[in-house]
Image 1 (cartoon, chains in turn brown, orange):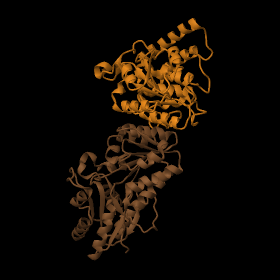
Image 2 (cartoon, chains in turn cyan, green):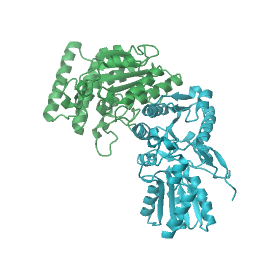
Image 3 (cartoon, helix red, strand yellow):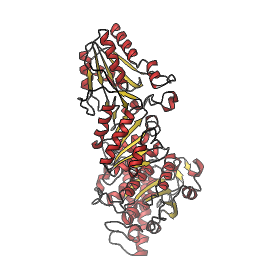
Image 4 (cartoon, chains in turn brown, green):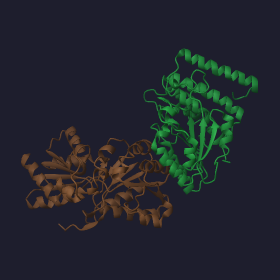
Length: 316
Length: 293
């Protein structure tokens, strides 16, 4: 296959896409809580100053104001670090956005362990679990620049509340320009008969590289980018479970309550008892280090995932 | 002065009669549902009466118009007062309230947008003001001259989100925002000043950038007068400190924390209705008969 190229940070793609969209849609508003720098929104603020609303460091107010703006028909992007957005203002997301059905686009920047050594106050390893348990909010974690661009463009016309999260490091381009993207429809990057990685968000690129390692070791490997956790593409999971001997889920999230738990639950209820391993952040405060180091520590690295796959296959 | 009601604008005498009628309806639906926030609904009903019948440009006909005035009830638990006023305004038939709190009814114990006339789902406290700030900010962005009214309980002012939103309201000079505090001085545990002291509330809101006025929140004449003055100051959000009595209008409920969400038994219900009937009778002797009474 063609060598994958390193792209930009998804954060940068988000910011560039949003600026383009903001110029096209004068009713598009960005609401930010002293995070236009970390959100790469300085350019948006300079070029479209009437379309950015600053609320200061006040995430509850950020989400409440966003709901109010959205109630008047505006296209609202509420941008804040994922850790604060989905914890500090969880009740505002639950009541003012989801329950009140105000179609705010909640953007969780620097998600997962993107903040690395800044520690657990700044990590969001709970957000999938928290939001999956709240009705009427869709959840997307784009894996690369293409998925990020496509999801941000798609939500301009999106009628429901949605949460989108990504990190800030450059991402490998996973597609060769001929892919399609649809919220709620998983993208199959590779199909395999031995193991299939079902991954979401930035760990997808690690799973994709792990597939190359495994192929060299003679193991037929599939990779699915499950960019959307709600609405969830159950069929893709069932199909993978029928095609592969084992399933490995990979996410930048607690091993509890996220993609892995969702897949395990669905497979069991469907009567598809395929060996499954959930790879994510275990039930502990993370080791200190960069995002990459934390990933490697917990086996969310190409080599780590390849080794886990071999081990699960051996035990199956 | 704020331009008002697209429909019929009631005069003060009509409003006084409406308040009596609304109190009857509140007690009636709470009694039938065997649940509700009696004290708080009675303390804020005169405010809702004046807003919907004299002040706000909102009606079933214009409810989806971008230029309508908005009302967001942050103290969502007093939804019975809101339901009664919305029914009277024709947003839904009054008999729909027979299903209040019943299995599969849309009329639950807090406001939801499933009910025609309700702008925002509320119930958890400290949520109305941030949303109202967003709506008011949108009005400024769009150069629309609607007003946003939001009703807060005094007990919920302990929620920090109110103060985050207050900072923003002043920062964005939202003089199209009118915050009303139902200052009945009681919350479920007891006096607000004992549970978590709020005073001096006027100075607190002034220091946060509001133009503040106090008013007797159970006096429709005083309320009409105060709302005709909004915005109190150009470039500042308005805050109406509405001094009310929890349980207002029913002697044995007044200023009695036990009536926060107590439902009248049969005897108490008859007593309450008798009081309202007597009050109306005296009112008619004093003012003559109004056709719509």
